[in-house]
Amino acid sequence: MIVTTNASLLAEHFADTRNQTEKICAPLRTEDYVAQPIVDVSPPKWHLAHTTWFFEEFILHKYMKGYKPFHPEYAFLFNSYYISMGERWQRPMRGNLTRPGVEEIYQFRKYVDEHMMEFLENGCSKEVEGLLLIGINHEQQHQELLMTDIKYILGSYPLFPAYDDSIRIPKADDPGELRFDISDEGVYPIGFEGEGFCYDNELAAHQVFLHKFGLANRLITKGEYLDFMRDGGYSQHHLWLSDAWDWINENEVTFPLYWHNIDGAWHEYTLAGLKPVDENAPMTHVSLYEADAYAHWAGLRLPTEFEWETSCRKLHKSATNQDNFVDRGILHPYQTSQLHDMLGNTWEWTNSAYLPYPRYKKAPGAIGEYNGKFMMNQMVLRGGSCATPQNHIRISYRNFFHPYLRWQFTGIRLAKDIE
Image 1 (cartoon, one colour):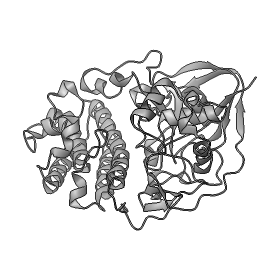
Image 2: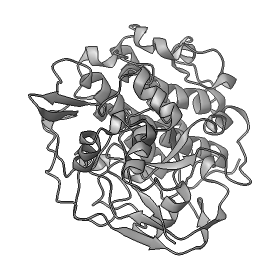
Image 3: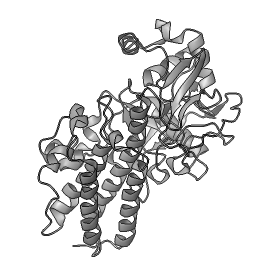
Image 4: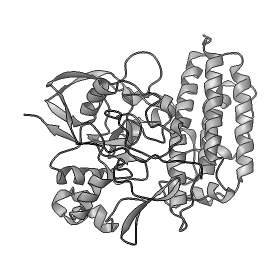
């Protein structure tokens, strides 16, 4: 067995990640842990258990000699979509799992964490190191889902309670005029290259040809989106894709998620509670359908994921402490005077279908179910959000969701063709 030299650093990274998940849940009441208002939202208790199940099933159960699972039925309750790992509890029914209780789930986490730290004391093989890094990044993804699921749970309550009363959302700066950074026609590199972790859907690195295009210097604001609404944007069928028009009519969508018109003024639910809409702040919680309709209304378009990545490599280069990630504790997108703001704040919809790159190779076994099997009927988002851990994001990172979903922090950046 080849033992990695990074065992102590990996153990520290593992422990920090596990602690961060529990920190996110600290402000919750016991009842908050169980709610599941819609199928796309999982109860916080389930997130805590599922991320723990991942380490138990993929590492401890297979590689730690003599390991005994915490509970023989937890693999059935807390598997998500890994068919290779056996039968699973139904996703829409996760909120019905009142047992095991919250206290038992935390005992499960403690049990697995203690065994993981013991296991890592003697180092691990490169194979296990790869699984551990996937597990850590998997938990960071669930940390973001936790934040957005908690927001949906609390935002569904009629009294709009704050997740955390200590959150302070800065007033957004004046965004200034929308300008476009121009990229010349040419061949550009796409995908992950170099050292460090990446997901398999960021590979293989390759080149794409792009025509000359312009990418907006900032995200579309809530004030600009209000102009679209005041102009009857939700009622003009010619602005909407066919599926999108069916979606807004079937679901009676006439304004953004979390928005409420109170005495003639728009308010929105935030993790700090119900607040007046800040018109200078970036628009968020919009579906791809809404983002695309807005782009058509504005006489522009959404960028492809390749245009986005090419521009970000040139304009933003890497995540910094000035970017609005979850580490800042603001938990809400806001406009700053910083140029471009392409990393953090909101995930940015692209007009690219989520498909494999050239020479993509799906991993064997259950790990191969992580990304590859979702490469159909979903759209790519880029850049991370105010709920994303800073050390989790990369310029090549490809997120993906169905075009009708909007409970994530998703926003709009426009592009245009240059003749």
